[in-house]
Length: 608
Image 1 (cartoon, rainbow, N blue to C red):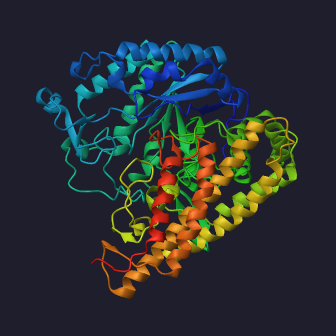
Image 2 (image 1 turned 30 degrees about the vertical axis):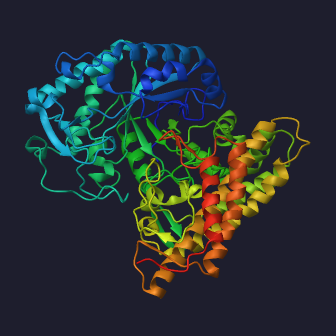
Image 3 (image 1 turned 45 degrees about the vertical axis):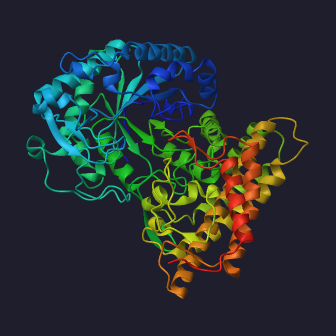
């Protein structure tokens, strides 16, 4: 490993960069305008108390600037948004917390927008399935006009927000931006984005490499930052550069130079082992420790170019189970912290737009940073973590529970298609019913009408493998939960009762959620077997037999547990990305009523 001769602050040191955000901040809303109401003094104090010294907020250029080049894109509300951000920046500085804006620019424009009547000459690649709706057309960054627009806009950001700590840039995937942003040379293995789809529409960008386009965009931000008096930091994120180039995407990294700092995904591009089978880790994961081979290669290249390197990960929760405040896989988190220290990572961006709650997990990061030498020892770390977060509890039982929780997730069948489409995130709200529609499941992180075609999430796994894996996960988790209850469910604990309640509530809900998902998978297997047995095709009603009734009865028992938990803890079931409940007490109550009614009135006939 290449060690920089000049010491720079590392992530666990006082001046090391540690970025978080507030879960009440709406990524898909008018985030910059709402920021002053969301990021209160108390929020900053709480974030700082858990060891973080920066936050990130989403920015959109056309909501914040006054462009002379494309005045049609200007927003009348830009001054109000800028004033809101200035208040947040000033408030954060009082607490010693810097503010970063996240940009994914230039954002494409709807294909039917009147803008194109006057600016057809800058139209680039069309993308028909944008995250926020489509089709949309890219502002082609291979045109001088768009480059001048970007230079003007980025300059205005830093002029209008002179105390801004920096910006975080995604330049691939996510929203459609430049012409290459959704043209895939390699599959992302995410069940959504595939390989390249010819023909490449933009004749200008077809003559250029995506690395050239990306580096040019990043450089426009750098030039604006050099002119700014406070020297805002430029963090270029390697998210999805793998859609164009093999790891570690040297074609892009070798075009970067200071003041650019590389933000590299800690887990993506890694390999985990599941039942002696290698699994590609191409999303955030608390199951997988890291660093990935992609991260190691990117860090090595970046250091050769004297670029500061930060790690991007999520320490609260991930798509693995996103509708609880945190996954208490403390053994895994500790190993991540130790390895980031060993790798001399400069900073960490520790959350995306979900998994942002301050919980045991975020407190654990702050505690580790307070004494990284002593806390390199797991036993010392867990003993102090238990005492400082919960009070006078049985630290041994907690450490045992955390071990079981982390062991359970070793059996998690990680695959992008499973993460993005399985009903695990909303399983507590799904009724088991004899009526099979055969409808698609849909994305698991959005509010959508839910289908029941369980096969959509299997990826390369069989249904039997999913059932076997989650049976093991559930059993191991329940073993850990028993230790958790013994340590935390005590009326004698006088200190930090809220922490005890919240963490036990979360762990118990995870157990219930795992059981719901397992029952869904078992019921689907029964459904497929029954369809084959009677020669039926869907949509249809299947006659309930003893096996189906047994699964449904178990899920009714489990739903009663989930109902009690969600009634007592409103944090459960909330997905912070879509800012909506994917399950809650009313939904679970409705599910129970539906299933109890169906069990009381079994269907004797099948409708074909």
